[in-house]
Amino acid sequence: MSDITPETQTEAQIEQIEEDFEASGALVGIIMGSKNDMEKMLPAEKYLAEQGIESEVHVMSAHRDPAKVTEFCTTARARGLKVIIAGAGMSAALPGVAAAHTDLPVIGVPILGKSLGGLDALLSAVQMPPGIPVACVAIDGAKNAGVLAARIINA
Ligand code: AIR
Image (tube, rainbow, N blue to C red; front, side, top):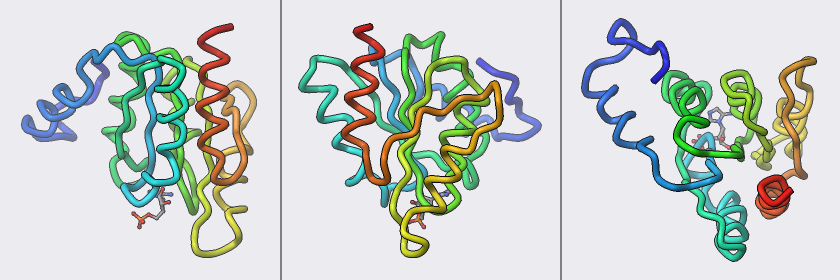
């Protein structure tokens, strides 16, 4: 477990995080900034399932639930995940924040929002500083995120 402590979270929240993120046997963690992104992100899960690769799917926002994202990403490797797929729209911090908290490969999926044609999310995911890589697929390109995750796992 990471350094998130009761100073920042209630005991109930911490218990919930531990329950949510118990080792599941999944190799890929699929996370997204809103439940409203689910429909666009599920093609990644579907492709992986077709390849016999188990994934786990969670909603967590880098802006709305930063502690949950930290917890998920800092414990990901220890729980057996090999790749994280992170999708978000608007100012899509989630892929970058995930990459900041784990050394697992992170694949970003920019989600098309209501303005700017998805460019906001694309640039937020792709313009990462040196040392903190995010492999970014196309806007609404969740299927390719699944394909790339499978290729990484089978490399
Ligand atoms: N989002 C949520 N927290 C931070 C960001 N960038 C994104 C979600 C979603 C969009 O904001 O990934 O694509 C709108 O979220 P919602 O929940 O209002 O529909």
